[in-house]
View 1 (spheres, rainbow, N blue to C red):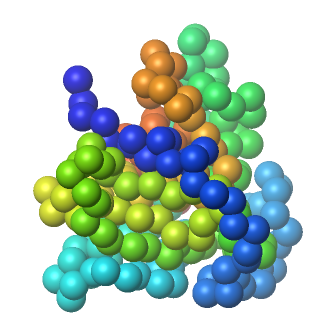
View 2 (cartoon, rainbow, N blue to C red):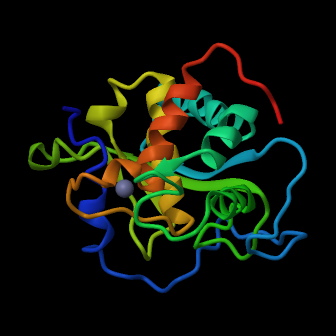
Length: 211
Ligand SMILES: [Zn+2]
């Protein structure tokens, strides 16, 4: 069994809610949020703030972010999302929306801390050495936060594809996608888990087909 790579859920509900809006990443977008967003061209990725990263760690982060953008902009990713099934039906666990709607939400990229759907992955990132007690925690983000925290212990062992998968999982939370708190049988089929794993697998491929 995999280690608890996404113990992040632990923090999702426990962290205090900060109703503030980040001033670091909001940007006006040309298109309103929602499932009608139809971006053209590749998805851009933007790191607004990255704290705790050394120069070398930042290089690794940037390469992973490029991969994340390539995956999200690929035909392979789109086809896998649209074709995803859970319990024999199109869709995902913990989400009632059809795959096409889920894909549209991803492409719209309206993070909870950005003011509109701009079709761009906007993230603020923090690298921290979590305590031994939290050694199983890969990273987390929480409801009221505009930041994705990654545990340096795991970051160090990740290749770029694994890092892209982790960042993808947490970024999907910032779009409102959730999963079970506990490691239920259906949790791997939730949007953050299923697509985090998909992003990792696609990021490891030498070549992807742009949309
Ligand atoms: Zn999670």
